[in-house]
Length: 542
Image (tube, rainbow, N blue to C red):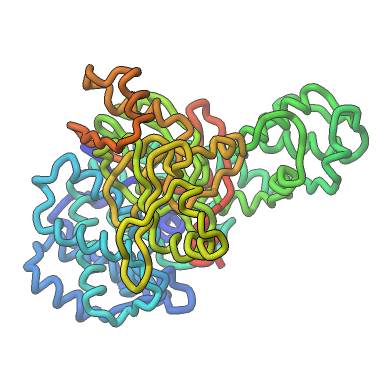
Protein backbone atom coordinates (compact mmCIF):
# COMPACT_ATOMS: atom_id res chain seq x y z
CA UNK A 1 0.00 0.00 0.00
CA UNK A 2 2.95 2.34 0.58
CA UNK A 3 5.59 2.93 -2.04
CA UNK A 4 8.10 4.52 0.35
CA UNK A 5 8.15 6.56 3.52
CA UNK A 6 4.80 8.28 3.44
CA UNK A 7 2.49 10.81 5.02
CA UNK A 8 -0.31 8.96 6.75
CA UNK A 9 -2.91 9.62 9.37
CA UNK A 10 -4.87 12.83 9.81
CA UNK A 11 -5.47 14.47 13.18
CA UNK A 12 -9.03 14.48 14.48
CA UNK A 13 -9.56 18.05 13.31
CA UNK A 14 -8.85 16.94 9.77
CA UNK A 15 -11.47 14.22 9.87
CA UNK A 16 -14.11 16.51 11.36
CA UNK A 17 -14.08 18.71 8.31
CA UNK A 18 -13.74 15.94 5.73
CA UNK A 19 -15.87 13.08 7.05
CA UNK A 20 -19.01 14.46 5.41
CA UNK A 21 -17.36 14.79 2.02
CA UNK A 22 -18.73 12.65 -0.79
CA UNK A 23 -15.63 13.22 -2.86
CA UNK A 24 -14.09 10.07 -4.30
CA UNK A 25 -11.57 11.56 -6.69
CA UNK A 26 -8.14 9.99 -7.11
CA UNK A 27 -5.74 11.96 -4.84
CA UNK A 28 -2.86 11.13 -7.16
CA UNK A 29 -4.58 12.04 -10.41
CA UNK A 30 -3.10 15.07 -12.19
CA UNK A 31 -6.37 15.41 -14.12
CA UNK A 32 -8.49 16.23 -11.07
CA UNK A 33 -9.84 19.77 -11.42
CA UNK A 34 -11.82 20.05 -8.19
CA UNK A 35 -10.61 22.92 -6.00
CA UNK A 36 -11.93 23.45 -2.48
CA UNK A 37 -13.89 26.61 -1.79
CA UNK A 38 -12.27 29.22 0.40
CA UNK A 39 -13.14 28.57 4.06
CA UNK A 40 -14.05 32.02 5.37
CA UNK A 41 -15.27 30.45 8.63
CA UNK A 42 -11.62 30.50 9.71
CA UNK A 43 -10.59 33.73 11.42
CA UNK A 44 -7.69 34.93 13.53
CA UNK A 45 -9.74 33.97 16.61
CA UNK A 46 -10.24 30.28 15.79
CA UNK A 47 -7.30 29.53 13.48
CA UNK A 48 -4.56 27.04 14.30
CA UNK A 49 -1.82 29.48 13.22
CA UNK A 50 -1.90 33.23 13.80
CA UNK A 51 -0.12 33.97 10.50
CA UNK A 52 -2.06 34.66 7.30
CA UNK A 53 -1.00 35.86 3.83
CA UNK A 54 -2.74 37.30 0.79
CA UNK A 55 -3.87 34.96 -1.98
CA UNK A 56 -2.10 37.17 -4.53
CA UNK A 57 1.22 36.01 -3.04
CA UNK A 58 0.33 32.41 -3.88
CA UNK A 59 -0.48 33.39 -7.46
CA UNK A 60 2.89 35.15 -7.71
CA UNK A 61 4.69 32.07 -6.31
CA UNK A 62 2.97 29.71 -8.75
CA UNK A 63 3.82 31.99 -11.68
CA UNK A 64 7.43 32.53 -10.60
CA UNK A 65 8.06 28.77 -10.27
CA UNK A 66 6.03 27.72 -13.33
CA UNK A 67 4.26 25.01 -11.35
CA UNK A 68 2.33 22.35 -13.28
CA UNK A 69 -1.47 22.40 -13.16
CA UNK A 70 -1.64 19.37 -10.86
CA UNK A 71 0.43 21.09 -8.14
CA UNK A 72 -1.05 24.52 -8.81
CA UNK A 73 -4.60 23.35 -8.18
CA UNK A 74 -3.59 21.40 -5.09
CA UNK A 75 -1.82 24.44 -3.62
CA UNK A 76 -4.85 26.66 -4.25
CA UNK A 77 -7.13 24.06 -2.66
CA UNK A 78 -4.77 23.61 0.27
CA UNK A 79 -4.76 27.32 1.13
CA UNK A 80 -8.43 27.88 0.27
CA UNK A 81 -9.26 25.23 2.89
CA UNK A 82 -7.11 27.15 5.42
CA UNK A 83 -8.33 30.65 4.39
CA UNK A 84 -4.68 31.42 3.56
CA UNK A 85 -3.49 30.65 7.04
CA UNK A 86 0.12 29.49 7.38
CA UNK A 87 0.54 25.73 7.82
CA UNK A 88 4.19 25.51 8.85
CA UNK A 89 4.92 28.72 10.81
CA UNK A 90 3.33 30.92 13.48
CA UNK A 91 4.42 33.72 15.78
CA UNK A 92 5.76 30.98 18.08
CA UNK A 93 8.14 29.76 15.35
CA UNK A 94 8.11 26.58 13.28
CA UNK A 95 4.92 24.62 14.03
CA UNK A 96 5.15 21.05 15.24
CA UNK A 97 3.88 19.90 11.84
CA UNK A 98 6.57 21.98 10.16
CA UNK A 99 9.23 20.25 12.23
CA UNK A 100 7.64 16.87 11.60
CA UNK A 101 7.56 17.21 7.84
CA UNK A 102 11.07 18.70 7.80
CA UNK A 103 12.42 15.73 9.78
CA UNK A 104 10.68 13.14 7.63
CA UNK A 105 11.64 14.82 4.38
CA UNK A 106 15.29 14.90 5.44
CA UNK A 107 15.22 11.24 6.39
CA UNK A 108 13.62 10.24 3.10
CA UNK A 109 16.16 12.13 1.02
CA UNK A 110 19.12 10.89 3.06
CA UNK A 111 18.54 7.62 1.18
CA UNK A 112 17.73 9.20 -2.18
CA UNK A 113 19.64 12.52 -2.30
CA UNK A 114 19.50 12.47 -6.10
CA UNK A 115 15.77 13.24 -5.85
CA UNK A 116 16.29 16.33 -3.70
CA UNK A 117 16.93 18.76 -6.56
CA UNK A 118 15.83 22.33 -5.86
CA UNK A 119 14.54 21.33 -2.43
CA UNK A 120 18.12 21.18 -1.12
CA UNK A 121 18.06 24.95 -0.65
CA UNK A 122 14.73 24.66 1.16
CA UNK A 123 16.09 22.07 3.60
CA UNK A 124 19.05 24.32 4.41
CA UNK A 125 16.65 27.18 5.02
CA UNK A 126 14.56 25.00 7.32
CA UNK A 127 17.67 23.88 9.21
CA UNK A 128 18.41 27.54 9.88
CA UNK A 129 14.83 28.48 10.80
CA UNK A 130 14.41 25.57 13.23
CA UNK A 131 17.76 26.33 14.85
CA UNK A 132 16.98 30.06 15.07
CA UNK A 133 13.33 29.63 16.13
CA UNK A 134 12.49 33.31 16.59
CA UNK A 135 9.36 34.58 18.33
CA UNK A 136 9.82 37.96 16.62
CA UNK A 137 8.76 36.51 13.25
CA UNK A 138 5.87 38.10 11.44
CA UNK A 139 3.45 36.80 8.84
CA UNK A 140 4.31 39.85 6.76
CA UNK A 141 7.86 38.60 6.21
CA UNK A 142 8.02 37.94 2.46
CA UNK A 143 10.91 35.47 2.72
CA UNK A 144 9.08 33.49 5.40
CA UNK A 145 5.92 33.46 3.27
CA UNK A 146 7.87 32.08 0.31
CA UNK A 147 9.38 29.39 2.53
CA UNK A 148 5.87 28.53 3.75
CA UNK A 149 4.65 28.06 0.17
CA UNK A 150 7.80 26.16 -0.84
CA UNK A 151 7.22 23.69 2.01
CA UNK A 152 3.64 23.19 0.90
CA UNK A 153 4.77 22.57 -2.67
CA UNK A 154 7.21 19.89 -1.50
CA UNK A 155 4.59 18.42 0.86
CA UNK A 156 2.15 18.02 -2.02
CA UNK A 157 4.76 16.64 -4.42
CA UNK A 158 5.91 14.19 -1.78
CA UNK A 159 2.37 13.10 -1.03
CA UNK A 160 1.47 12.54 -4.68
CA UNK A 161 4.67 10.59 -5.33
CA UNK A 162 4.65 8.35 -2.28
CA UNK A 163 1.07 7.46 -1.38
CA UNK A 164 -0.93 4.69 -2.99
CA UNK A 165 -4.26 5.64 -4.50
CA UNK A 166 -7.33 5.94 -2.31
CA UNK A 167 -6.02 5.89 1.24
CA UNK A 168 -6.04 9.68 1.72
CA UNK A 169 -8.59 11.71 -0.23
CA UNK A 170 -7.76 15.07 -1.76
CA UNK A 171 -9.67 17.14 0.80
CA UNK A 172 -8.14 15.16 3.65
CA UNK A 173 -4.70 15.88 2.23
CA UNK A 174 -5.53 19.60 2.06
CA UNK A 175 -6.42 19.49 5.74
CA UNK A 176 -3.48 17.34 6.77
CA UNK A 177 -2.16 20.17 8.92
CA UNK A 178 -4.70 21.31 11.57
CA UNK A 179 -6.36 24.61 10.71
CA UNK A 180 -9.13 25.42 13.21
CA UNK A 181 -9.91 24.87 16.89
CA UNK A 182 -12.57 22.35 17.89
CA UNK A 183 -14.15 20.56 20.85
CA UNK A 184 -12.12 17.61 22.16
CA UNK A 185 -14.99 15.14 22.51
CA UNK A 186 -16.67 16.16 19.24
CA UNK A 187 -13.40 15.72 17.39
CA UNK A 188 -12.78 12.32 18.98
CA UNK A 189 -16.32 11.18 18.22
CA UNK A 190 -16.00 12.24 14.56
CA UNK A 191 -12.72 10.39 14.25
CA UNK A 192 -14.01 7.19 15.84
CA UNK A 193 -17.16 7.07 13.74
CA UNK A 194 -15.83 8.13 10.32
CA UNK A 195 -16.06 5.45 7.66
CA UNK A 196 -14.51 5.56 4.20
CA UNK A 197 -16.93 4.41 1.50
CA UNK A 198 -14.26 2.42 -0.29
CA UNK A 199 -13.05 0.78 2.91
CA UNK A 200 -9.57 2.30 2.65
CA UNK A 201 -8.75 3.71 6.08
CA UNK A 202 -5.71 5.49 7.49
CA UNK A 203 -5.09 2.86 10.12
CA UNK A 204 -4.63 0.25 7.41
CA UNK A 205 -1.39 1.90 6.33
CA UNK A 206 -0.20 3.42 9.61
CA UNK A 207 -0.13 0.95 12.54
CA UNK A 208 1.08 3.66 14.96
CA UNK A 209 -2.06 5.66 14.25
CA UNK A 210 -4.33 2.63 14.15
CA UNK A 211 -3.15 1.30 17.51
CA UNK A 212 -3.78 4.65 19.20
CA UNK A 213 -7.21 4.86 17.57
CA UNK A 214 -8.22 1.53 19.14
CA UNK A 215 -7.54 2.99 22.57
CA UNK A 216 -9.27 6.24 21.64
CA UNK A 217 -12.45 4.19 21.07
CA UNK A 218 -12.11 2.73 24.57
CA UNK A 219 -11.42 6.07 26.27
CA UNK A 220 -14.23 7.85 24.43
CA UNK A 221 -16.63 5.15 25.64
CA UNK A 222 -15.44 5.69 29.23
CA UNK A 223 -16.01 9.44 28.86
CA UNK A 224 -19.50 8.94 27.45
CA UNK A 225 -20.39 6.72 30.41
CA UNK A 226 -19.36 9.35 32.95
CA UNK A 227 -15.60 8.97 33.19
CA UNK A 228 -13.69 7.25 35.96
CA UNK A 229 -13.75 7.93 39.73
CA UNK A 230 -11.37 10.29 41.52
CA UNK A 231 -9.29 8.63 44.26
CA UNK A 232 -9.22 11.05 47.21
CA UNK A 233 -6.97 9.14 49.55
CA UNK A 234 -3.38 9.40 50.70
CA UNK A 235 -0.97 6.73 49.37
CA UNK A 236 -0.26 5.51 52.89
CA UNK A 237 -3.87 4.34 53.17
CA UNK A 238 -3.82 2.44 49.87
CA UNK A 239 -1.59 -0.53 50.54
CA UNK A 240 -1.80 -4.25 51.47
CA UNK A 241 -4.30 -4.63 54.28
CA UNK A 242 -6.32 -1.56 53.29
CA UNK A 243 -10.08 -1.79 52.95
CA UNK A 244 -13.03 0.50 52.45
CA UNK A 245 -14.79 2.50 49.72
CA UNK A 246 -11.56 4.02 48.35
CA UNK A 247 -10.25 0.52 47.59
CA UNK A 248 -13.46 -0.18 45.66
CA UNK A 249 -13.04 3.05 43.71
CA UNK A 250 -9.38 2.25 42.99
CA UNK A 251 -10.38 -1.15 41.60
CA UNK A 252 -13.09 0.45 39.47
CA UNK A 253 -10.62 3.03 38.13
CA UNK A 254 -8.10 0.36 37.17
CA UNK A 255 -10.76 -1.87 35.63
CA UNK A 256 -11.97 0.97 33.38
CA UNK A 257 -8.46 1.64 32.03
CA UNK A 258 -7.85 -2.09 31.45
CA UNK A 259 -5.15 -2.42 34.10
CA UNK A 260 -7.30 -4.80 36.17
CA UNK A 261 -8.99 -7.22 33.79
CA UNK A 262 -10.67 -9.21 36.60
CA UNK A 263 -13.98 -7.79 37.82
CA UNK A 264 -13.83 -7.23 41.59
CA UNK A 265 -16.11 -4.91 43.58
CA UNK A 266 -15.02 -6.00 47.06
CA UNK A 267 -13.53 -3.44 49.44
CA UNK A 268 -10.43 -5.43 50.40
CA UNK A 269 -6.88 -5.28 49.04
CA UNK A 270 -6.02 -8.28 46.84
CA UNK A 271 -3.04 -9.57 44.90
CA UNK A 272 -5.01 -8.83 41.71
CA UNK A 273 -5.21 -5.18 42.79
CA UNK A 274 -1.45 -5.08 43.38
CA UNK A 275 -0.88 -6.54 39.89
CA UNK A 276 -3.24 -3.93 38.41
CA UNK A 277 -1.30 -1.12 40.10
CA UNK A 278 1.92 -2.55 38.66
CA UNK A 279 0.33 -2.54 35.19
CA UNK A 280 -0.62 1.11 35.65
CA UNK A 281 2.86 1.99 36.90
CA UNK A 282 4.49 0.28 33.95
CA UNK A 283 2.27 2.14 31.49
CA UNK A 284 3.06 5.52 33.05
CA UNK A 285 6.82 5.22 33.33
CA UNK A 286 7.16 4.21 36.98
CA UNK A 287 8.94 1.31 38.64
CA UNK A 288 6.34 -1.45 38.87
CA UNK A 289 6.45 -2.23 42.59
CA UNK A 290 2.73 -2.07 43.47
CA UNK A 291 3.32 0.81 45.91
CA UNK A 292 1.32 3.93 45.03
CA UNK A 293 2.87 7.39 45.42
CA UNK A 294 1.36 10.86 45.37
CA UNK A 295 2.62 11.40 41.81
CA UNK A 296 1.02 8.15 40.67
CA UNK A 297 -2.30 9.06 42.31
CA UNK A 298 -2.15 12.36 40.43
CA UNK A 299 -1.76 10.40 37.18
CA UNK A 300 -4.64 8.10 38.19
CA UNK A 301 -6.84 11.15 38.63
CA UNK A 302 -6.12 12.79 35.27
CA UNK A 303 -9.64 13.17 33.76
CA UNK A 304 -10.38 10.82 30.88
CA UNK A 305 -11.13 13.85 28.66
CA UNK A 306 -7.54 14.99 29.16
CA UNK A 307 -6.29 11.56 28.11
CA UNK A 308 -8.52 11.75 25.01
CA UNK A 309 -6.93 15.08 24.09
CA UNK A 310 -3.51 13.51 24.65
CA UNK A 311 -4.41 10.62 22.34
CA UNK A 312 -5.62 13.01 19.63
CA UNK A 313 -2.43 15.06 19.75
CA UNK A 314 -0.23 11.99 19.53
CA UNK A 315 -2.31 10.46 16.74
CA UNK A 316 -1.59 13.67 14.85
CA UNK A 317 2.12 13.21 15.47
CA UNK A 318 2.04 9.75 13.92
CA UNK A 319 1.36 11.29 10.52
CA UNK A 320 5.01 12.35 10.52
CA UNK A 321 6.33 9.01 11.79
CA UNK A 322 8.86 7.30 9.54
CA UNK A 323 6.99 4.39 7.94
CA UNK A 324 8.83 1.24 6.86
CA UNK A 325 12.34 2.63 7.62
CA UNK A 326 15.19 1.20 5.61
CA UNK A 327 18.31 -0.18 7.27
CA UNK A 328 19.49 1.01 10.67
CA UNK A 329 17.65 3.69 12.62
CA UNK A 330 18.16 5.14 16.10
CA UNK A 331 15.03 6.68 17.61
CA UNK A 332 14.85 8.60 20.89
CA UNK A 333 11.46 9.35 22.42
CA UNK A 334 12.19 12.17 24.83
CA UNK A 335 9.17 11.89 27.20
CA UNK A 336 9.78 8.15 27.45
CA UNK A 337 13.48 8.66 28.32
CA UNK A 338 14.24 5.81 25.97
CA UNK A 339 16.38 5.10 22.92
CA UNK A 340 15.66 2.30 20.44
CA UNK A 341 17.91 0.84 17.76
CA UNK A 342 16.13 -0.88 14.89
CA UNK A 343 16.98 -2.44 11.55
CA UNK A 344 14.38 -2.55 8.79
CA UNK A 345 11.71 -1.68 11.36
CA UNK A 346 12.71 -4.55 13.71
CA UNK A 347 13.91 -3.64 17.21
CA UNK A 348 17.50 -4.66 17.95
CA UNK A 349 17.73 -3.20 21.49
CA UNK A 350 16.61 -0.24 23.56
CA UNK A 351 18.31 1.77 26.26
CA UNK A 352 17.45 4.20 29.04
CA UNK A 353 18.59 7.78 28.45
CA UNK A 354 18.81 11.09 30.29
CA UNK A 355 17.50 14.05 28.28
CA UNK A 356 17.53 17.83 28.60
CA UNK A 357 15.97 19.38 31.67
CA UNK A 358 13.16 21.92 31.50
CA UNK A 359 14.58 25.17 30.13
CA UNK A 360 17.32 23.25 28.31
CA UNK A 361 15.08 20.82 26.47
CA UNK A 362 16.44 18.51 23.80
CA UNK A 363 15.33 19.63 20.32
CA UNK A 364 13.32 17.43 17.96
CA UNK A 365 15.25 16.82 14.73
CA UNK A 366 16.79 14.26 12.39
CA UNK A 367 20.54 13.72 11.95
CA UNK A 368 23.06 11.14 10.79
CA UNK A 369 25.36 9.60 13.37
CA UNK A 370 28.77 9.41 11.69
CA UNK A 371 31.43 9.64 14.42
CA UNK A 372 32.36 7.82 17.60
CA UNK A 373 34.75 9.77 19.84
CA UNK A 374 36.55 7.82 22.56
CA UNK A 375 37.99 9.53 25.68
CA UNK A 376 36.50 12.87 24.56
CA UNK A 377 37.34 16.35 25.68
CA UNK A 378 34.30 18.33 26.77
CA UNK A 379 34.44 21.71 25.10
CA UNK A 380 32.14 23.51 27.49
CA UNK A 381 29.46 25.68 25.81
CA UNK A 382 29.76 29.42 26.32
CA UNK A 383 26.39 29.59 28.08
CA UNK A 384 27.52 27.08 30.73
CA UNK A 385 30.87 28.85 31.13
CA UNK A 386 29.08 32.15 31.83
CA UNK A 387 26.30 30.79 34.03
CA UNK A 388 28.16 28.10 35.97
CA UNK A 389 31.93 27.90 35.49
CA UNK A 390 32.96 31.56 35.88
CA UNK A 391 30.89 32.10 39.06
CA UNK A 392 32.38 28.89 40.49
CA UNK A 393 35.91 30.10 39.61
CA UNK A 394 35.29 33.35 41.47
CA UNK A 395 34.35 31.43 44.61
CA UNK A 396 37.14 28.86 44.24
CA UNK A 397 40.33 29.74 42.30
CA UNK A 398 41.22 26.01 42.16
CA UNK A 399 37.88 25.06 40.60
CA UNK A 400 39.27 24.20 37.14
CA UNK A 401 42.09 22.03 38.49
CA UNK A 402 39.76 20.20 40.89
CA UNK A 403 37.39 19.35 38.03
CA UNK A 404 40.03 18.36 35.45
CA UNK A 405 39.35 21.48 33.40
CA UNK A 406 41.70 23.79 31.54
CA UNK A 407 41.53 27.04 29.63
CA UNK A 408 41.91 26.53 25.90
CA UNK A 409 41.96 29.95 24.29
CA UNK A 410 39.30 32.66 24.24
CA UNK A 411 35.69 32.91 23.09
CA UNK A 412 35.89 36.70 22.92
CA UNK A 413 34.50 39.48 25.11
CA UNK A 414 36.70 38.30 27.95
CA UNK A 415 35.17 34.83 28.09
CA UNK A 416 37.78 32.05 28.20
CA UNK A 417 37.36 28.84 26.23
CA UNK A 418 37.33 26.01 28.78
CA UNK A 419 37.43 22.28 28.25
CA UNK A 420 37.41 19.24 30.50
CA UNK A 421 40.15 16.70 29.79
CA UNK A 422 39.47 12.97 29.32
CA UNK A 423 39.11 11.03 32.54
CA UNK A 424 36.76 9.78 35.21
CA UNK A 425 35.41 13.27 36.00
CA UNK A 426 34.64 14.17 32.39
CA UNK A 427 30.96 15.09 32.07
CA UNK A 428 30.79 13.31 28.71
CA UNK A 429 32.06 10.11 30.27
CA UNK A 430 34.33 7.92 28.17
CA UNK A 431 32.72 8.13 24.74
CA UNK A 432 30.44 10.37 22.71
CA UNK A 433 28.55 9.88 19.45
CA UNK A 434 28.19 12.72 16.98
CA UNK A 435 25.43 13.38 14.46
CA UNK A 436 26.27 16.92 13.24
CA UNK A 437 23.41 19.38 13.74
CA UNK A 438 22.69 23.03 14.40
CA UNK A 439 21.77 22.41 18.03
CA UNK A 440 25.09 20.98 19.30
CA UNK A 441 23.27 17.87 20.56
CA UNK A 442 24.87 14.42 20.67
CA UNK A 443 24.84 11.14 22.61
CA UNK A 444 27.40 10.57 25.34
CA UNK A 445 28.39 8.56 28.38
CA UNK A 446 28.16 10.10 31.86
CA UNK A 447 29.82 9.57 35.24
CA UNK A 448 26.43 10.31 36.90
CA UNK A 449 25.17 6.72 36.65
CA UNK A 450 22.70 7.13 39.52
CA UNK A 451 20.37 9.19 37.32
CA UNK A 452 19.40 6.07 35.39
CA UNK A 453 17.72 4.63 38.49
CA UNK A 454 15.16 7.46 38.41
CA UNK A 455 11.80 7.12 36.67
CA UNK A 456 11.87 10.64 35.23
CA UNK A 457 15.24 11.53 33.69
CA UNK A 458 15.31 15.12 32.42
CA UNK A 459 18.57 16.44 33.88
CA UNK A 460 21.04 17.27 31.10
CA UNK A 461 21.88 20.59 29.43
CA UNK A 462 20.32 19.30 26.21
CA UNK A 463 22.48 16.40 25.08
CA UNK A 464 21.38 12.79 25.54
CA UNK A 465 23.21 10.57 28.04
CA UNK A 466 23.27 6.82 27.41
CA UNK A 467 22.98 4.17 30.11
CA UNK A 468 25.16 1.67 28.21
CA UNK A 469 27.46 3.61 25.86
CA UNK A 470 29.77 0.64 25.31
CA UNK A 471 26.84 -1.33 23.91
CA UNK A 472 26.16 1.50 21.46
CA UNK A 473 29.83 1.73 20.45
CA UNK A 474 30.00 -2.03 19.95
CA UNK A 475 26.89 -1.99 17.78
CA UNK A 476 28.07 0.91 15.61
CA UNK A 477 31.52 -0.62 15.07
CA UNK A 478 30.40 -4.23 14.63
CA UNK A 479 31.21 -4.25 10.90
CA UNK A 480 34.87 -3.54 11.65
CA UNK A 481 36.41 -6.73 13.05
CA UNK A 482 39.39 -4.79 14.42
CA UNK A 483 37.13 -3.16 17.04
CA UNK A 484 37.04 -5.95 19.59
CA UNK A 485 35.49 -5.55 23.03
CA UNK A 486 38.98 -5.19 24.52
CA UNK A 487 39.94 -2.49 22.02
CA UNK A 488 36.77 -0.53 22.76
CA UNK A 489 37.47 -0.72 26.52
CA UNK A 490 41.02 0.47 25.93
CA UNK A 491 39.91 3.40 23.77
CA UNK A 492 37.25 4.45 26.29
CA UNK A 493 39.81 4.53 29.11
CA UNK A 494 42.65 6.14 27.17
CA UNK A 495 44.21 9.48 28.11
CA UNK A 496 44.00 10.79 24.54
CA UNK A 497 40.90 11.51 22.51
CA UNK A 498 40.34 9.25 19.46
CA UNK A 499 37.74 9.83 16.76
CA UNK A 500 36.39 7.01 14.57
CA UNK A 501 34.32 7.87 11.50
CA UNK A 502 31.64 5.37 10.54
CA UNK A 503 31.71 4.00 7.00
CA UNK A 504 27.92 4.11 6.88
CA UNK A 505 26.20 6.83 8.97
CA UNK A 506 23.13 5.80 10.96
CA UNK A 507 20.03 8.05 10.91
CA UNK A 508 18.96 9.44 14.27
CA UNK A 509 15.38 10.57 14.88
CA UNK A 510 14.54 12.60 18.01
CA UNK A 511 10.79 12.36 18.71
CA UNK A 512 8.22 13.55 21.25
CA UNK A 513 5.40 11.10 21.97
CA UNK A 514 3.51 11.34 25.26
CA UNK A 515 1.16 8.49 24.26
CA UNK A 516 2.13 5.37 22.32
CA UNK A 517 1.30 1.68 22.01
CA UNK A 518 4.02 -0.92 22.57
CA UNK A 519 4.57 -4.19 20.70
CA UNK A 520 2.20 -6.03 23.04
CA UNK A 521 -0.66 -3.60 22.38
CA UNK A 522 -0.33 -1.86 25.76
CA UNK A 523 -1.03 1.90 25.84
CA UNK A 524 1.58 4.09 27.56
CA UNK A 525 1.42 7.69 28.74
CA UNK A 526 4.31 10.01 29.64
CA UNK A 527 4.62 13.47 31.15
CA UNK A 528 4.62 16.47 28.83
CA UNK A 529 8.16 17.34 29.96
CA UNK A 530 8.65 20.35 27.65
CA UNK A 531 5.06 21.58 27.41
CA UNK A 532 4.65 20.68 23.72
CA UNK A 533 1.29 19.00 24.37
CA UNK A 534 0.03 22.03 26.28
CA UNK A 535 0.92 24.34 23.39
CA UNK A 536 -0.93 22.09 20.94
CA UNK A 537 -4.00 21.94 23.20
CA UNK A 538 -4.25 25.73 23.08
CA UNK A 539 -3.93 25.72 19.29
CA UNK A 540 -6.26 22.78 18.60
CA UNK A 541 -9.01 22.82 21.21
CA UNK A 542 -11.58 25.35 22.37
